[in-house]
Amino acid sequence: MMTFKKILGAVSLTMLVAGCGGSVGDVTGKVTYKDKPVTSGTVVVLGKDGIPKSSSIQNDGSYRVVGVKSGEARVMVSSPPLVGGPASVKDGAKAEVSDKPSQSQEAPAPAANPELTKTWFAIPEKYGDTTKTDLKLTVVGGTNTFDIPLN
Image (cartoon, rainbow, N blue to C red; front, side, top):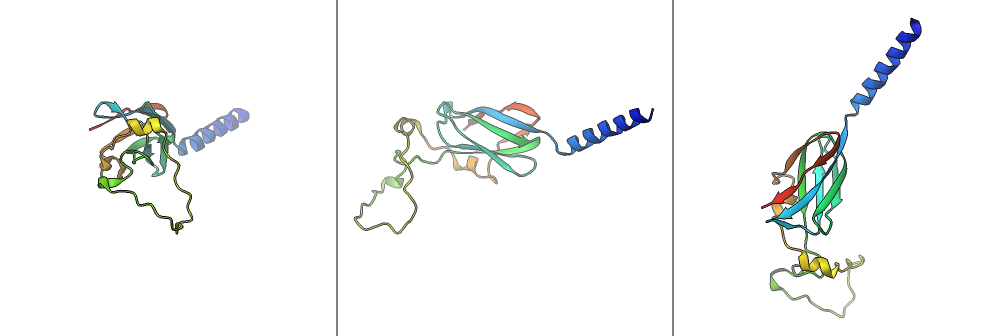
């Protein structure tokens, strides 16, 4: 009888400790803007624990964010202009060319894939701002499908 009580106690303790950590889920889906796939950028899911998890957006608009804490989550989407793309120079400004050495020690950003620059378009900035986005979901353990149709 004593052995059964020890086993039951060990199992109960194991279940209690495992339950304290809470579960996590993966979030997958497709990002579209006005019914067209968003072909580059990032999806960030801010889970219940406040830890942001992110994923790159693929050429077809799909994404997969792994390890998000279960519960209410906020979602942010950003798709900044691609280097060398049509919107990398704002308001028709011309890029200045200089033969002077650059003051910056940073390496220049690599040029974007030419195919992506043809399909890139701007999305509203509010979706990339944690205080302005209205994108939310409830994450459960396992796989969660959350398509993101932006307007």
